[in-house]
Image (cartoon, rainbow, N blue to C red; front, side, top):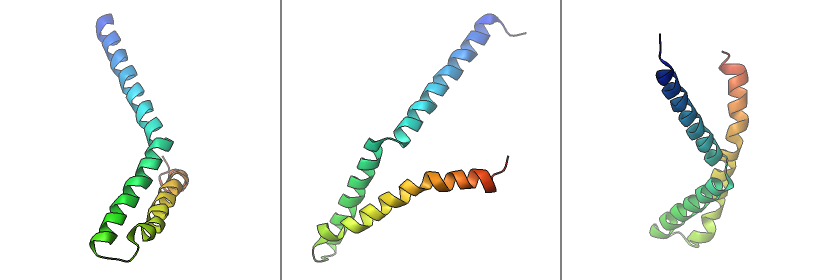
Length: 89
């Protein structure tokens, strides 16, 4: 039989884990994260296009950066479909 101290410790661990999960979920859906993804994608593509000497690299980097962002925004929709129809548990 578990002691009250042991049960209290287990409850504290569960509460700490839940808080971490909630924080991670908030980050995953935050506008800050989405903006940073857009910015870093744009910069990475821009520097790459500049390095390979594509004309107007910073203008040409806009489309793939926005396309990547749009693809990440659709993921929650497809996750719901997957959970509903594929991963039936």
